Structure formats: C-alpha cells, structure tokens
Length: 72
Image (cartoon, rainbow, N blue to C red):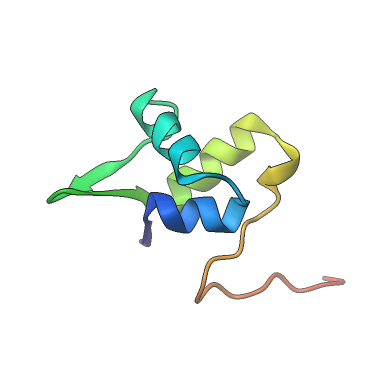
C-alpha cells in the first residue's frame, strides 16, 4: 500500500496542489491524516480518476512506479 501527498498527485497530473486539496475537502477523493499530513492511497487515487474519466486520468506515473509496458 502506497500513500501519496497532495503535491505528489498534483505533480503527476500537472494540476495545482489546491485542486487536489479541494477534491479532498469536498470528500470526492478519500484521504487520511497522518499527524498533520494528508495522504491519499494510490489505489484510492486510481479509483477516483477512473470514476472521473478525464483525459488526465491516464495512469499517472509517480517516482518509483514501474512504467507500463508498451505493446503488451
């Protein structure tokens, strides 16, 4: 299980971190507080993006994630 910060998500989706925080505050994107920090499970983010079906929803690549193979 991997957790991402709002800044990690914003960087991967080329969005403002404020947009990600708004999704969290609107309870559209599930997040967890770890102390004072907000973190989102990578699986919750993927489900959120799949549900929204936006052009930005193509599998974001985070540092340390394997690249999808091309051609199967």
